[in-house]
Image (cartoon, rainbow, N blue to C red; front, side, top):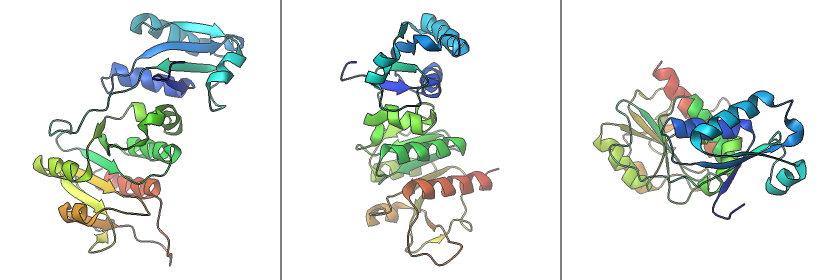
Length: 250
């Protein structure tokens, strides 16, 4: 496999790459799919789907030994199907990137690609329209992120911006900027989180900069059900807040 290509493991990830490309979410292309030849009967339906899509999208489906796939992959849940893909261009955030009346999220401070993927899975399920990433992010580990997000990373529109630029762009098009924090905060369960809303969640270690908090229309906190001196992980906090936004916009 070439150093500048990305490996996606398992049918869930590969199907997400296909659907995201067909829907115009990203420009990633599948170069070729490898299938363990011993899975021909047990995975016949998926293999038939991949071969049909391969004709349409221009990638070959190649049968090989399990040992050849094992030499390529890092995980064990691929089910004998992997795809070599191109990288994905992530555009810079502009005023035209976000939909009117939408819900966008910026995540900072997540410490590993698995937690990042778990967060994207929940954000996608909660109806997030777009995710804004800082210039340094986990998409260089796109295969791992896709697997841990159950494909959500390839179905979500992603954009690049630093926090201050993202907040100002969102404000300019009428979004309410909501930051997760403690100082001068209101409970997320009491705050007005009606769309359009741009949620920013920082890392549990460094949080969000004071300059960015000053750009917020609202700073929200998550109240606990008991005395607890710790903080939720970025992925957990983003998940709870995303579902509170979903609840308020039902």
